[in-house]
Image 1 (cartoon, one colour):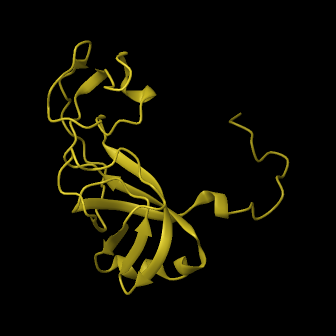
Image 2 (cartoon, one colour; image 1 turned 180 degrees about the vertical axis):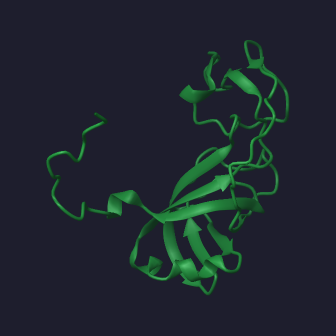
Image 3 (cartoon, helix red, strand yellow; image 1 turned 90 degrees about the vertical axis):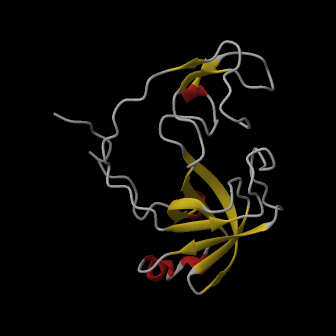
Length: 164
């Protein structure tokens, strides 16, 4: 959602509860061409510009083996997003919907996700295409795209049971 702190007709903001520390650690920063939310794309494109994911020490050691993948899932903290809008009115359709029915960056825990094309790795920096976040966005995690994985073993009886 591209906007600056305004509330559209039909939207509802709520009082945020006190923060509880979940132990979240930012492991790096993302470098993109966008410094303003109004210029940032709404969705990343795999043919978009090359962006840099810069890992802090000691996390760079965790990149070992990543080069064997074509795509990665990037999780990042949308640090400039509002967190208090419960009902939102997307500009594109004029309806009002709940925050959990939208992919808007305006959410209680503004975690962004993108599937990005892995372009290369230079030391502690991963080069990708397909991001949609601002320059300097804090990095939460990076994983090989789950579509690249196959199950390690066939399902066994009891694998999907839920409790007694």
